[in-house]
Structure formats: C-alpha cells, structure tokens
Length: 429
Image (cartoon, rainbow, N blue to C red; front, side, top):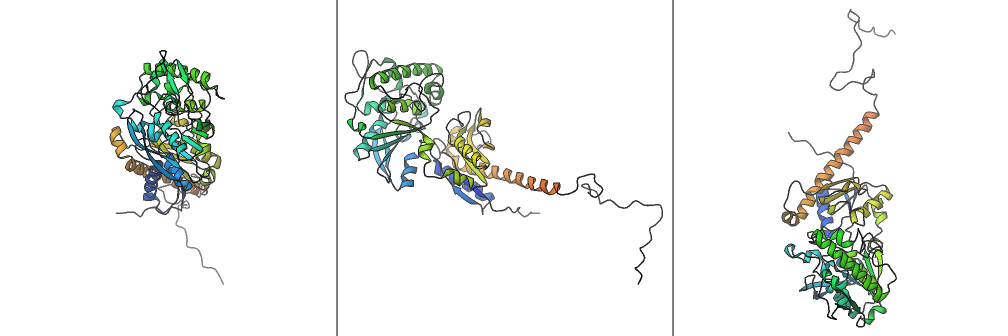
C-alpha cells in the first residue's frame, strides 16, 4: 500500500559551495546540489551562489559577473610543457590571472607529481599577457596549485634571473632554489612599476616555518616527508635572497598569504604585489551575508572537510557568515578528515555512499553530490517533523496525568462501584 508523500512548507535554501578539486567547478557543484534538493522539495526557493576561492574557475566566474571575457593563450604549464590556458579581462578593464589554469594540480598527472620540479613560469607569462592587453590592474587568484617554487618561475617569466654559484641560470622548480646564489633584477618587466598587482590568497598560508607551505601542502602535491624538509629549506633560502634583492614591505617568510599557491604569494609580494584575503576580494559585490540571511538553510561543500576548512576554505567562510545571520549550515564533501567537526558547521557528511575508488568518485562527482544532497535533506526534514511533533506533544498534558491517554491504551473510564449505573433521568420540564 503506497503512502502519500509528506507535505512541507516552502523553504528558502541557499546553495553556496566551492568547486570540488579535479572534478566539479563551483557552478557545477551548485547545480548538482540543487538537483538533489529538488527531488525532495520541488517547490523550494533556491539561491545558487557558487563561490570561488582563487582556484579553479575564478577567472571565468569573475568575467561572467562583470560582463568581461576570457582570453585564450598558450603558456608554460607546471611541467614545463605548453598548455592551453586563459586569463580574464573584466568589464572595468582589469585582468584576472587564475594560477590554477596554468600551474594547477589538475594539470599534473598523478604519476608525475613532484613539487620540487613543477613551475609557476606560466603565471608570469599570463601576467605579461594581461599587461600586453592593456590591463593596469591585475588580480592573481591563488588556489589549487600544483607547485611549490615560491613564485620563482613567475619571476623568471617576468624577467628576473636566478643564478647559481657559477653564474648559470637555475632550472625550473622549487628544488633548484637550494642552489640559489644570486638574483639579477635588471630584466624585470618595467610595466610592473606602473601597474597594480593584487594577489587574492588564503591569509593563513605562510612561506616558511613549522606551518610553512612545503610542510603543510607538499604531501598532497606528491612530496615525500624528506622532500618536504628539503623544499622548506630551499624556500628559506629563497625568502632571504628575495629580501636582499627587493627589500619588500612585508616579511616574506611569515606574512599572511606568502605561502599561497606554493609560495607564489611571496614571489609576487617581492615585486610589489599586495597580498589580500581572498574572500574580501572575490566575494565583493555578491552581498553574501544578506543572501545567506534570507535563507532557512544553507548548503555548502568542497572536496574535503578537515582541519584546514576553518583556515580560509569556502565552507568555513560560509559557516562563519551564516552563523552571524543565524542560519543553519549543512556541508557535503568528497572526503572527511580529522578536524571536520571543528569547522563551525551544523551538519556535514561525505558524498560517498560507501568505499569508492578515487577515479570513480571524480568521474561520478555530480551524481554522488546530487544523491548526497537528497539524502541529507531527507534527514533534515525528518528532524523538522520530529521537532514539530515534539512541540505538539508539549502542548498536551503530560503522560501520567488523569486526562492524558497513554499510547496504545483506551482513554480511562470511571471506576465501577459494583452495581450497574442507572441511565441519567431526563430533565424535568
């Protein structure tokens, strides 16, 4: 026997995910979550707010938001080979260079991941291309990098020569910085002095020290523990050399954002870039706080929830802003790691229904995300019905009172006195 589906009031749900690395853009993730929501609440009022963090999809998203356009280019990829890439020219004439589009982890095959060898050279080439196109304000989005060269490659593309003890030029990669003996700044692109160079970065990421970028992010880019320590020492050498060569206004070793994208933040800061908290830059104009506050529920998500989530990741920022607005937040993630419970989220779950090979999870990400959104929302609605029933019960006399029937029992009857009660006499006229 079929039962009618329960009816629910109309809900307003804000869907504000990041992209899922190497599988879904922020827009694709938002659409997949929305599909799952509509299976349960077809009449829900949905506000899709795909959020970029400087990584994959940033240039396209900002171009679309400002009436700008993408400009295609061929540049040097993270392995030194040419790759098809792009930058954005925005509606106001400024440019956006998305480092992930030319030096991102997705461009490095799993069998070739070595952050000591990969380069940001293509980032510098795209900055030059943006200047060639007439942009005098260039925003570099940091995120999803496959490099750990401290921005050395980008500076090489911008005309800086990195020399070994014999006067020869160093090859690409952060590992080569262990042999750095000198920095020749004579060929630096002079247009940088007239342009405004901004870096949208995670302020929690620093170049050196115990929380330095090589130690924190080297393993996910393919480095062994020994390589992480070698890279860390090389980046210390790099920071000292840059400080001598450029006398930057910030401490390149530990200033907020210097570790962004494998240290790209430090390299660009050395030549005058300003390092800005990415959400202050990238969420400007979205009116995010008001849109989250208008919702009954916020759903966010990204590839992984763990201890890093509160350190400048999209779900952590969404949770912070939703909390200020008094709106509950549900997060969906590809994987759950240690520290996920400390991300400030009201609820979270993995999109995988069980053990799934990584390659399959990446291929089926949209399907898994939609299914997970459906499952999670059904659970949420069970909770709302339970709360409603609890309120209804609280409005009744409690169990055990003389007027409250217990479940499964008939209402109490007057006690018998041993003789049959007479019918009541009819009223007299």
